[in-house]
Image (cartoon, rainbow, N blue to C red):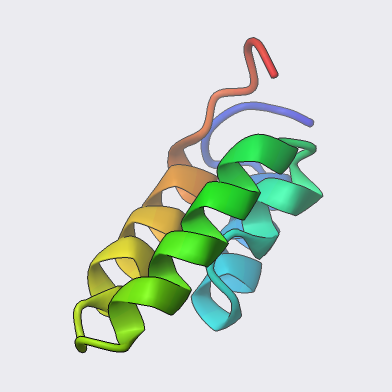
Length: 68
């Protein structure tokens, strides 16, 4: 997948908007996808899941591709 600003990153960010970690999963980053999904699920219980949700969206959008 290409770098920051690419169509792939935009699609990944949109996916993360709906489900935290889904964008990272699409980018092939399984571990961070699981971490973000689980953290968001836990923190939504105390209404702080939006922090992880936002982190997930920005991480997917700004990922440059380097190491997986």
